[in-house]
Image 1 (cartoon, rainbow, N blue to C red):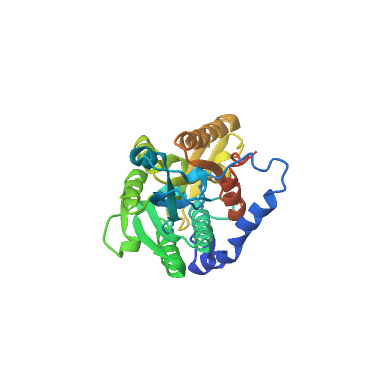
Image 2: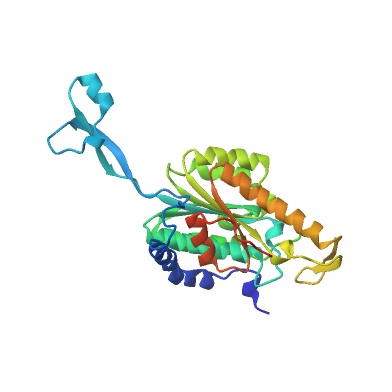
Length: 317
């Protein structure tokens, strides 16, 4: 049995560093696209922070004139800028029971870890500090740290958070990185916001059932100061056109089983598609770039499409 299909390994997440460059190379190729420039990334680029104003001198850029200081002093002034502070990229992964499920390729939790790792390595290549958080059955928050050390610490935590899920979550103590407890998305987003400077880049990887009204309010507050994008993960089974019947679903151990009754392929497909597409619409309404992705899709393609602002892929069609 290939256990990497059911829980991610640190070595696998480390190897994804070699693929992070594909995101940037894809962006360079897009400049020749017929519709280049018609779509926008949900992330703003690096900029400059205002430092101070001084008297205008011949040759200064007129676009940087500080009209407020000019009006107050009666003399023409221009703004001076300094490179912005070191930016933070943060990834938030879902560890609810729904993520411990998969019928093709891997569990959704494994797909989430791969997307998170790819995002982390891309952020490291841009010189960002790295932060990671989780919600659901396993809750954790890794404060931001720069460079390879920051990436390794985040990826190690992601592996622990994404380990094989218990059918019934328990509470207890443990390391800060892999504490087993239960928490919703809202609490994690609020906790994350308290430790971030403005202008952070944030990736959410979640199941459609995890976005409730409280989480929406937290996300709305987060969007005031940060850029957010989200991947809503789905398994092929959840959107497949299933014939009417009874389907047995079993845990890996075989000790627990349940049956799912489908009363018609149209009903089954409509229920899942409506739920997931509603979540994507709500996320976009809040200002987050969002899309649906299958757990068996290439993570590079998923993140590339998300950064381009490509509409949700037609999964299970």
